[in-house]
Image (tube, rainbow, N blue to C red; front, side, top):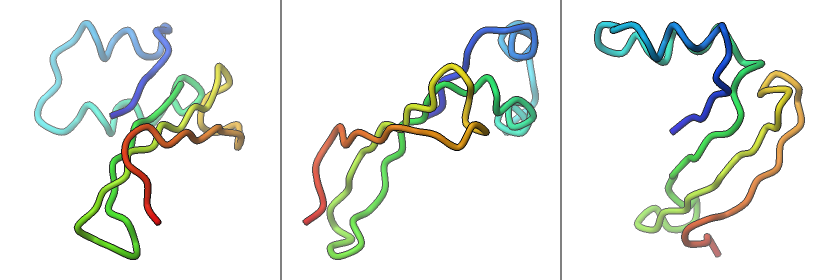
Length: 77
C-alpha cells in the first residue's frame, strides 16, 4: 500500500476513473509525491512467517534516497 501527497500531479488520479491496474503505473511517474509505503513480505529464514514494514520517505518523496523503516507487525528472527 502506497501513500501519496495530494498535489496537482496526483489529483487527477483521485478524480478520474482509470482502468484495471493503471493506477500504480500512473503514480509511478510522480515519485516526488510518494510519502510512504507499507509492505508485507515473508521472512527469509521462515517463509511461513510474515513481517510488515512501514517505509517513510518524507515530503521530498521516494526519489530523494532517504527513508525511515519501522517494523509495524511481527518480526523476523
